[in-house]
Image (tube, rainbow, N blue to C red; front, side):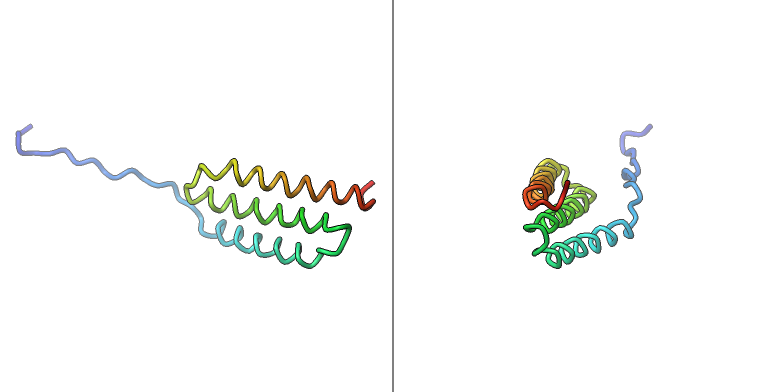
Length: 97
């Protein structure tokens, strides 16, 4: 090998990511938000909180897919809090056996 020659390496390949998954996650986020607003008066807002938890979960997964790995734990905690609070609201209101 000559002193003037350099070795070039190909750039690392990025995994193929389907844009359809991102579109589905955005649509799911808006659908959960709409459903949460629509059922806000049912069972003391328990169903509404659970729908908002689903919206946060889909948003968190969308952000995670873009490479923001540090957001997994905060989004998971918020989702569990909303879904747990919604379930508690359902049981207190007597809507869930």
